[in-house]
Every structure is written in C-alpha cells, then in structure tokens.
Length: 357
Image 1 (cartoon, rainbow, N blue to C red):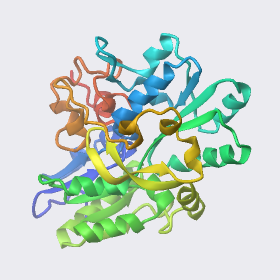
Image 2: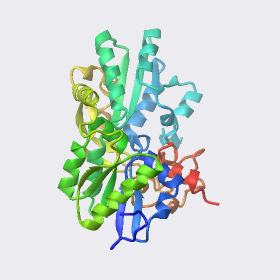
Image 3: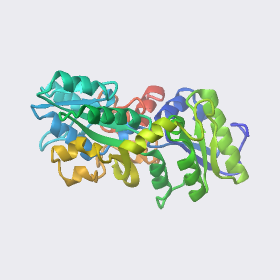
Image 4: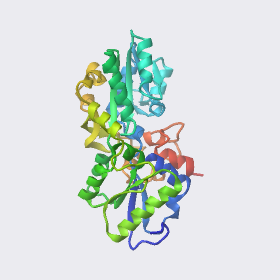
C-alpha cells in the first residue's frame, strides 16, 4: 500500500522510538500521510521515562562527598523535584555546586574511575532500553571478575514490549498499530513483539530510522490495517534478525531479570524493567546505600506538574504543541519536563523541527 493512498477509515499508528520521531518530523513524513491516518509519538526516549525515584536517588548520592556519580550526557539535565524551597533541580546544577558528577559514554568508563580512585565510591546511573543494557551487563561481569567493592549500579533499564502492552491496556487506548523500535529488536529479536501482536491483535512493524525505510514500514502497517491483519513484520531486515543478537540476549539473561518498573509519566508497568539478579545484586546501589524501599522497588509517583503535559506526551495523548508551556517557558535550554531534554524526546524534536514562530 502506498503511504499516500487514502485509508478506508481513520487509523492511529504509534512509533515508540525517539530516533524515529525525529526522522518523521525532520522529513515531514507525518505531513505526507493521507487524511484519516495519524502518527502518534510514544514513550521511546529512555531518558524521558527514567523513574523519578531513581533520579532523586541519584541526586541524593551525588551530594555525598565520597561518591563519584557517572551517567550519560542527557541525564545531567533532566529536572526532578528538589529539596523543599528549591523547586526542581538537575544533576548539572548539582555538579556546578560541587558534586562529583561525571559524564561517561559507556559503563566501562566507571571501571577506570574506580581503579584510579579506590578510596571513592563510584555509582553508575545506568539507563536505557534493551539496546544499552548489554553494556551495563558487561560492566557487571567485569566487577564480579575483579571483585571490586567500590562500584555500584543504580539501574533503570526499561523493557519496551511491556510498555507497549501497558499503553494498549489503558481504558482509553486508541492505538491501531505500532512501529516497533529497530535497535531494540536488533538485540532481543521479534518474539516479544510477535506475542504482543497476537495477544492484542495489532500490527507490529519493525522499522528503521532513515526516511525511505521508515516510510516503507508505515506503508506496511497501513496495508495490514486495511486488510484486517495483525502480527509482527520485520521491515528492517538489513539490521534485525528474528532471533536478535544471541550473545547479547544471553548476557542480559545472565545479569538481569524482569522487574516491575514505574516509568516516568506512565506509571507502574508489569515487567517493565530489568533488575540485577544474583550474584550481580551485590552491586545494586539502592541496596548498598540503603536508599529505601521506594527506590528498591522502583515505585515512585508519576511526575505531576500543572504547567507541563510531559506525561500526556509520553502516553501519546497529546502533541508537544498542545502543551501551554511548549516553547515558552519550556525550551531545550530551560526544560520543564524530560521530553524537552533528550535528543530523542518528542518535545525537543518539535522544538527543533516545528518551533513555534
């Protein structure tokens, strides 16, 4: 089916990868769709959905004089509720105030820091979906092999398929099909998405990130909807194999186990996260630093901010431009919500490609 061919009825298609969102907006793929076909941005930004409790715990640890806190770049600017009287705060502000917060590009960077500073406690704020979790698992393996005791991991890895299921189970869900994230599928394969498609009788089309393959995946999803078909289809065969990456899957299975996770903006998701299993649990920062059950179980409340509709954006209930704060006062330089921070966030993408004039 051609992307410009009018559908027989209105369809809602959600992409759940921030990289796909940016391609869609940059090349105007959503504006090329026929009347009645709508693309909805999903919670495909791991920075945006990192649990508030985990971020607050990271702030708490960063303020400890013996701790070196390490994380990826975008995490430094995610706003969270701060101490009484401070409103919101981010890790970049804490670093400016003297906290030892380090930017890393891979978890193994923390290993070198720990060996160079044996008298300090190095904490890795490990975020991301199944694409970045194998790198965290490699660090866990190295820590176990070296028997290091001054490295700890504050893990907030999310699982995409359970989050998609949670969106479909919402009472007001109006999602007819999904563009499944190609990079996640390149790691875990198609099985979880095949099961999801069968259970909810929806098309799940694995999509890439460049305009032409992404447009092709949209056309495949539209064709399946029009024919009344459901199932998982791989439209990114140049990268994704049905079985995924066997080595990475085995590593994830060895180091992690599925846990319930409270995604920021979405709430608790059954099996929505990855937690350390034995014997790697000895490196769990939430346990080692006695951060409390609200962090250990990852059950934090949803972010609530009357001026920011980030939660609704993450759930696909509204567009970034529907938020009254979009563009002013909420900007990438002064974000009110996480989707305006990350390069993969929908709000940041709208500001870059659909900035209000």
